[in-house]
Amino acid sequence: MNKTLLSTALCAAAFCLSPVLSAESALTNYIPTSPVENPISEHRWEIFGGIGYKPYSVGPGSGHTSPFWGFNGEGAYFFTSHWGIAGTGRGYFGTAHVNVPNSYGIYRPTTDEYMYMGGPEYRYARNEHLNLSLHAFVGAEYNQINGNIRTTSGEYVDPEAVGVYKDQPALGSSFGGAADFAVNNHWAFRIEPEVVMDDFKWSPNGGGLSAHFGASAGVVYRMRGIHHRGKSY
Image 1 (cartoon, rainbow, N blue to C red):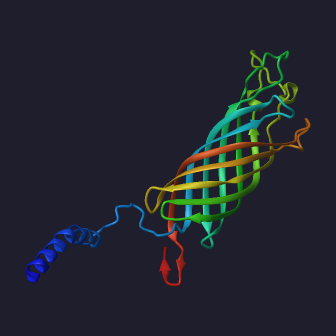
Image 2: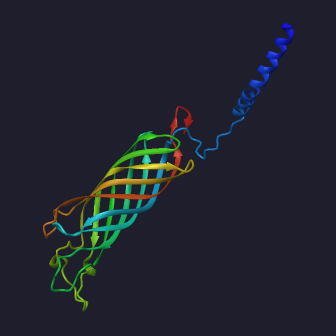
Image 3: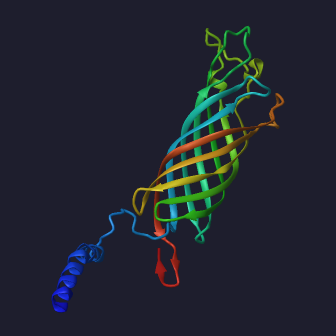
């Protein structure tokens, strides 16, 4: 009788454990399906390209700020897992809010702004799916509007006569961060919010410092892993 009960108990246990044993066998043969192989995102070089947005004050005082859209290109080199240096070249395009009414019949001339900046970048949080970084860029910018300030008859008008800056260089800077969402080991999608500053305080028509919230979005290509004690990540 005892032998019969023991046999029945063993059969029941085997029947109950069979799904668990099958699951363990499946886990042993598990192959990760994530396209990202690196446990940590530690790439030496990064190249970014995308679209950018920023409000731009094309003249001193209030009432001259317009939304501008354009492109943003960046390149970064990391000396360590966290610290690197980066450079950016940007172009923004829009229309200027001039003083109206005016005697020239000028209302919304087109304007271009180009920025060339560089500075440190700090990569403070990272894994195989998400990379977060901070940056502080300082450099030069140049606005182009002179050729577009004309009357309906084509006569050139001094931009200062309608309250906006002439073609001239200025100090530009941006302070913000970026979030990179990995697609695979090399490609990622980036969102980059920041505060962008334009300093025209040396302008002949009494310019000053303006700060606006801007943002960029695009793709990142990452390459060349950083080596740590014989390992490359």
